[in-house]
Image 1 (cartoon, helix red, strand yellow):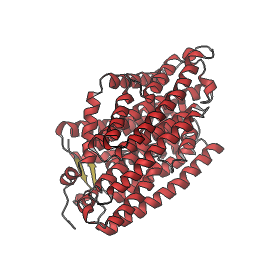
Image 2 (cartoon, rainbow, N blue to C red):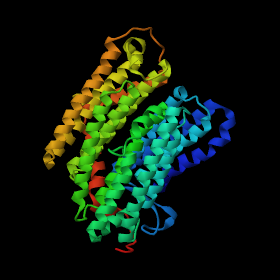
Image 3 (cartoon, rainbow, N blue to C red):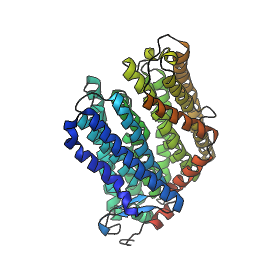
Image 4 (tube, rainbow, N blue to C red):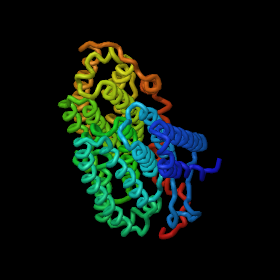
Length: 495
């Protein structure tokens, strides 16, 4: 199949959102079914792209309008992008199934449009080869996320959306100023050519520009101190959207951060920015874990846990080594699987029992055993217990951190993991050893998804080699900047 068909990954959700108003009159179920079909097709295209890239070992490069970069805009679907575009599509498809149970607030057509545009924005951030288009896709992601956060029309949702909007606006300003500095220094917006010219940029300009971009992306990537919006947004947003935030919106921000960071690796002051990111990432882990410990709302507790895991990924990317990047990608995949499982389970409990307070989880093992089992497996995986998937990626990140000499950061991460174990085992105890109640009928499609995710978590925990191999290839796609430059067919303008 022609590689240009990969452009459907951008075109399909955009056109899908455009046509939602045409089926508005057919009712809620028709709109939800339409979203399910679009996300299923998107997953099929993403699976084809993944198979094509990993079987041939060559990236798919889509050149818009026939103009070669840097004059034209290109999409770059290498090992990393093909893997995470598939994760974005698959998570969206699973949450489209969850929409049937979780979404009733009108207008459903607006929700469907925003849902598809959120998938579009994250896909574009991961696939683009142009730093300004990265900003454009980041804004699409952010604006749809603001609206979806407020979708439930409660006071808490409006407040959470406003916080997100204010911090997002600040982050976008930082990012755009950073892009302007780098464009002024290089005369190009194409990522491959920026990497080609990075060594010739004034070190101070490069350091300031890169730091501004990191701070700008820190909002979407949920890094301290620019993550104050995240717990409120996760709690207030519709349950499927919360899972999407954790599974791929934040991952798109992390990828953009890692991509831009390593494009500039030939800059003399590069390691100063890495040290800044190590501090931000470690603080994110520690502050989030202690914040989670105090929560009584389980959805909010898992939101803080998600922020902590994101800090761990950012720490891996900030190490400046191939081992760190590979481990960070491995953790990104594992985290996406576990957090979709957890937010799906907790969201379904909230739908069935009227809220996500800890009281509703007492005796859940008797009332909703499959959901309870899924949440339990997700909780044990998040802690990093052996034979569950996150154990391997967390171990590799800690080893990579110690190898670089950041022993203090590794120690703080391990200490934070103890705190994480305390609140997750408190939840597990409430589920299985407290309370009583009658059995509640569980949705067969949703329970099938829960079982599938549980099998994935355990299968990767028992046999991590395949996913680790995939993650190493994806990590090399970020770390090996020379190969990235070689793969992109630049005209040579300004080189």
